[in-house]
Length: 89
Picture (cartoon, rainbow, N blue to C red):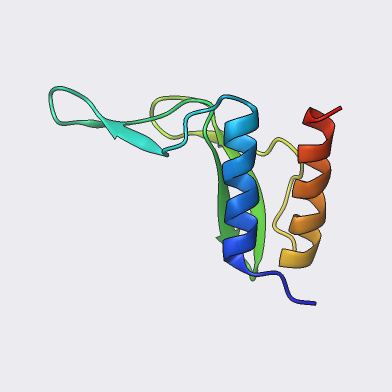
């Protein structure tokens, strides 16, 4: 069965909630500039697949916490489910 992008994004939102990470990718500062929220998880989409990313600096640099490449929606769903289960132990 095909996994929708919406389903994956809902799971990433849950990960942000479980880990007490910022829910928004970036925020506007008092001087009008935008800065990335360190710790925010988000989905990268490229090469026909998905990758879980986490912001690591104010410029938006990111790392891949559970997988080093883009995978199918079905595989990403499996990985996100496992990631969530690990936090609920």
